[in-house]
Length: 139
Length: 61
Image 1 (cartoon, helix red, strand yellow):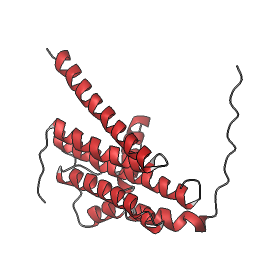
Image 2 (cartoon, each protein chain N blue to C red):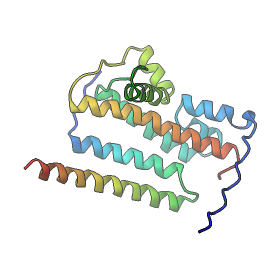
Image 3 (cartoon, chains in turn blue, green):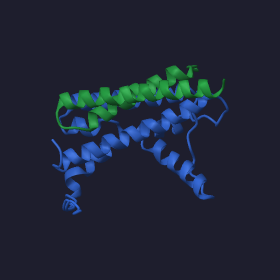
Image 4 (cartoon, rainbow over the protein chains, first blue to last red):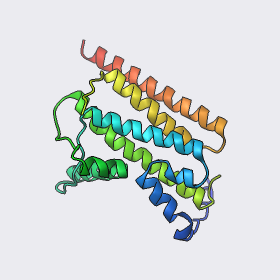
C-alpha cells in the first residue's frame, strides 16, 4: 500500500506579518481577529474566553504555579501554568489585583480551576487562528 | 468577590457551550460549516456528559 505524499512544509512568514496580531490576541482574547477585520469572530472569541475565565474565578478556581519534580507533576503544574498564562491580561490582572485563590477541596473549586485553564487554551486556539489568517494560510 | 455554586451538570454544560463556540469559530472555512461543526461538538459534549453520568450511576448501584 502506498502512502499519500506528505504536504510540503510551509515556510514561516516574516514576524512583521503576524507578530503584533498574535501578541494582541494573547493580551486581549479576540483582539487579533479585530485587528484582522474579523469583528464577529473576534467578539465571539472575546466573550467565550472572558466568560469562561470569569466563571472559573467565581467558582474560586486556583491558578497553577510551575512545579518541577516527577514527569506527571511537571506536566500538570507547568502545563496548567502555561494554560492560565495564555489567558493574557485576564491572568495578569487576576494576579496583580490579588484575586488568585489558594487550592481548595470541592467539586466547584475543581471545575473553577479547569475553567481557568480552559479559557487560556481557548485563547491559544484563537491565537493560532489569528496567526493563520495573518500569514495568509486561511481566509 | 461573589462565590458561585454550580452542580456538575451546570458546570459541564457551560463548559460545553463555550468550548463548542470557540471550536466552531476557529475551525472550518465557511460560516455554515462553522455553525454545523460547533453544534456537532456541542452534541458530542452532551452525549459524553450523559453517557458518563449514566455510566457512573450504574457503576455505583
